[in-house]
Length: 128
Image (cartoon, rainbow, N blue to C red; front, side, top):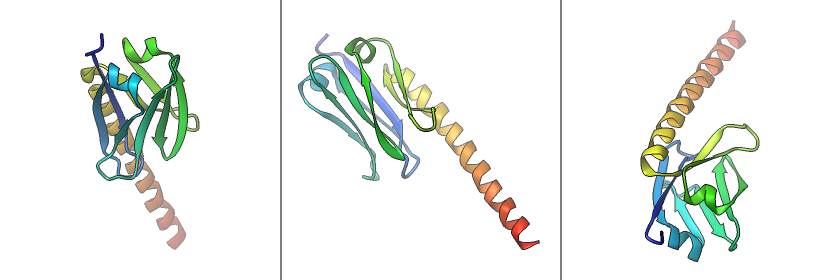
């Protein structure tokens, strides 16, 4: 059990890249784990108080999610943004996290294109 790895992933709210990293269960319980985006502008932080994990999830604004150890250490968990109600962070086996993150990135890209189109249409309406 102590050598078991858990993969964490999230979509960086600043640069839009997917961020994925694995941490051992031992490391999670022993210290505050931090998974930072390569852009340096966001990080997922986790700490364990002996009973529950507390995650500080970056999704534009940082919010806190509290999970019991069984949710974090077995199976998979998805943490949602309190504001948008969308999943923004995944914990679990690497393959599961990777797949969920890819789907999230595609969804975010579609939303961004839609916003860009709406902004373009707004400008066209303004200039008519």
